[in-house]
Length: 379
Image (cartoon, rainbow, N blue to C red; front, side):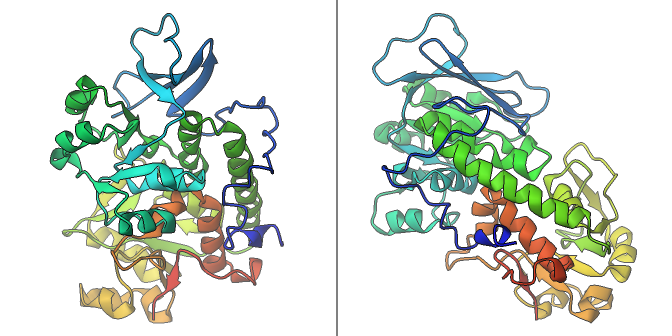
């Protein structure tokens, strides 16, 4: 069990010293990595560079986007005419999502982050320190993206999230100015490990394949050990998730990575087999209420820091069984003074810690020494 409890200290999660070179994962030659879980990207090693293909950059029907990673100063390899060229290793990165901050921090590369979409959405301590020191600029997001500032700063890469309905056209000003933009679409993944594996894309950009093989391999092994505990749990407590937003109660569907977390934690989830095109089901209070009235646990209750915050939204919530029995837990324990919730940042690359929390909540006897990391009990 000691191996399972090593995560919160995060001792191994820091970049190793230069003298302690990590060993490549089994099946991956030194200096290379392979994709085991993710379905949204591929990495191949070609003569003179690397080819990263984002298979669904904006939505399932869009054409794949290819990026040719070429050593800085080297000639572009022949072929791959459609590919966007990015020189490696990166020296500077603009991260438009907190997920991208997590990728950099996981690889010990937070010092490369020179720009953020918003200062609010960053939890990693090294990045917060760089913000305080004036080493990171804020570039805006979506339609508020400050193209002039990005062109002037000219980072080695802008990493953006590809949302449905968008296209690379919204970044044409940057592309025309020679500022590479890479679309990161981890949201298409249906399992926690697949989502976390997108860290390998940044590892390829940084020439840190050996490091990512070692560290992601540890996360995956830890996750599988924990999932085995959850799968063999004798009880299957009933769980309800979330809170309504503007009278719509969004819950994860069968293909959501959040639902996979619940499966691996060993619980009963009412919509485990129900699919929706968007990855979440838009339900009414009347649909969810019967489930909540009989549930054993209530998880992920918005921004609530106490039970009083929940009933302040709607007094009917007090009738739900988990509210009455005091089994309400929210995933906002690691929310900083700026309002950034680290669950959505480092939790994306440390699914083993998230699963540890869920098992501790649902089956406390299985992890008696575990202290909740992302979740907290609401009083």
